[in-house]
Image (cartoon, rainbow, N blue to C red):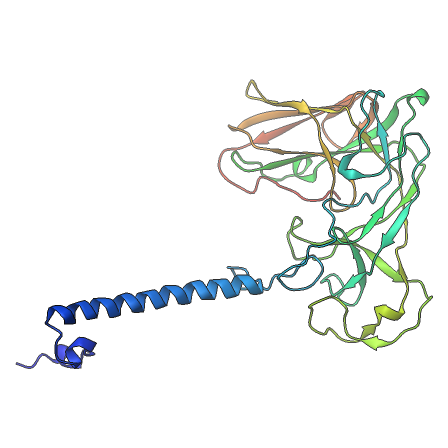
Amino acid sequence: MCNRRAWVKRPQFASRIGFKDTPSGRQMEVNIMNARNLFKVLAVVLMASVIGTLGFSSGAMARKVCADGSYPPCNTEGETATNNLSVPLWVTSDGSVISTPGGATCSANSTPTDLVPPTGTPISGYPIDPLAYYYVQGIHKWQAPCATWDQANGQVEVTAAWGDNLSGDAKLKVGSPIRVELVLTENSTVTRQGFTVVKLEPAALDRESSYGILATDDGLGSFSATESHRPGKPAQGLVTDIGTESFSATPTDFVPLVYDSQAWLTIVGNDVVVVDEAATAEINATGKVVYGYNLRVPSAGTYEITYTVPNVNITAADAGICGGQECSLLITVTAGGGNGGGGGPRR
């Protein structure tokens, strides 16, 4: 009886040349199969290499864009390691420890440093407004005024604001990171100039987006029509030629923030001291000085977060129990995974 399945089966190389059932023929079949598998592996590796080189993600094959707007490989030369201070700042202590967060330059007395406008060539092509130009955190440099509070005038009075994820309705979960943030603002009506920093990629996660200051044409240059100047981006229509324009950033009035370099953070829950250490602060993506801590708790329950700031006087807060030199907030952490209310730059 004819074996149709065997008849239609693709003949192996060794059978075609007449010695499939010989020892050398069987070895040849094995060698050919190994070679085919090797070629498949090499093809997969090559494809992954090409995807990585071109900067595509492994998810939706979205093209990665470098910080300067170009496509990979990215040029990191000249990028800054920290964000620029964009909101004016008072630094305070008892005089024994004086430090500034994020590498900001502050005067050693109560006379603030000058407002330093952005330098460099602004960049266009960001989703917030592809035809507008922006000075970008991590690429350009600028700084808001910063000075040391004179304790001879008494302690600086401040208001306190907790991170939105803590004072809002975010679900805090065991095992997931919980971002703890506190911002201190001088309780005053006196303002100083800084710069408003905005999120440039509205659809992106806060921590993955670029942030920057709108660059405005000061009218000192001429105009010509050309394509977008964001490096590596496709043409996005006719915009003014940055090479023949002069740009600047318009300052904004802010009530200064306050940083006490001797602040302390304590977090207690379920009769366990989870954190008891010097509080650290950073300059976030919007250019504000923020006390911050990435918290993970071992079990569900209620936790009390307390910042002690010995060189300020807290007069008000948006949540919790705050006054004098302490500000405390109770949070409830439930069992199970979740995003932890990781949060982003403060409002």
